[in-house]
Length: 152
Image (cartoon, rainbow, N blue to C red):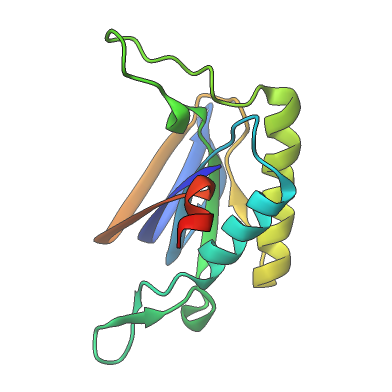
């Protein structure tokens, strides 16, 4: 499972001209799911997202987590995070989980993040052509991969 966290002052997702999810300050999370991902991976990643201390404190240092700023999450499914680009110029997405696995895991991530934050998670629509609008703050962008969890 891969996630790209972007610290934002605002973000929204629009599908067919309608806003499906919108947040003020917090994280825009792009989430990629692969077949090898487990419930353990999901829980580890959710805990990391919620606990990531990249928001400024009173001294301007990145010491605050999402809860400390009453921040929100906009969660967007993005299979292209598993693009393989080694050969040629057209990416392969074979590592990305198919919808029958990815959709339940995406929905579980929503529930897990809501449980951890006590707040509703804004979302896009799985598999839709989404337009994401964001104001990146910093910019602060963090890439996390559950395959790295045992290395730290």
